[in-house]
Length: 343
Image (cartoon, rainbow, N blue to C red; front, side):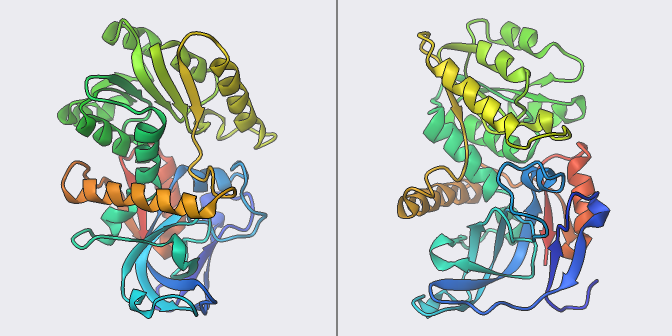
């Protein structure tokens, strides 16, 4: 479907990517405090991959429009919103709703995108970038001279996390399949093949005293290995459960197990720390503070992108109407960076 008319992509239930529905949509009218953003770029993250399986922790009931974040231009604003915002390129973190030509958003949730950054470039660092930034600087507090382990160093979050860690002056060990090792070495990362190598043993060879931080999106049994690889005073940041993506049963249970392990490890008197990172943490308690922190951190990520400390890694760009193909590609495990959907 490529008619130039507004469209949206609907996830009707637990379906294969080809089961996504592309349909015509109405341009929303912004209510008070709201803005309508004409989407220029959105993306396929791990969250959408879990949602189509019904495995994302707090996804809404089917059917719904997925799309965790977007970049676009403000097309209209409602009462109480500065009219000068119209025409501004912005980014927004949504959780759902981004896979649409036009999206209504609370104006207070919009973060300006600096001049000189393209829509697809900016899209690669919205949820992925703010996740990486907050885990690195707010949770692990990584400093120059430290050694960190990044699982999935070629992925959407991992590729940004690697670059931010290197810019901080940290030494980075990254797990990835062999096809990505040359690119990682070129950045200054020491790669480890998670498919053919004994990852804990190899990391111990590279960092005999342990690593200062581990960033783990895999969960499952491997999370215990991540914990035991920490140096005294080190920090584990768990931010997903990719190992359970295709499991059946409760979608809450993998997360609850992660939370239980983190709580237990933090009771041990060994000086190590564990966190379960959730980009939405604190939003329900203090939305004003949450928004201010998000704006500060995403602005810092955009600045890092603008000055070259981070390079946008776009795995592929496809039209929104080809969301099924984009989902297949993102799930293939063959790409580095983020698969972007454009209007």
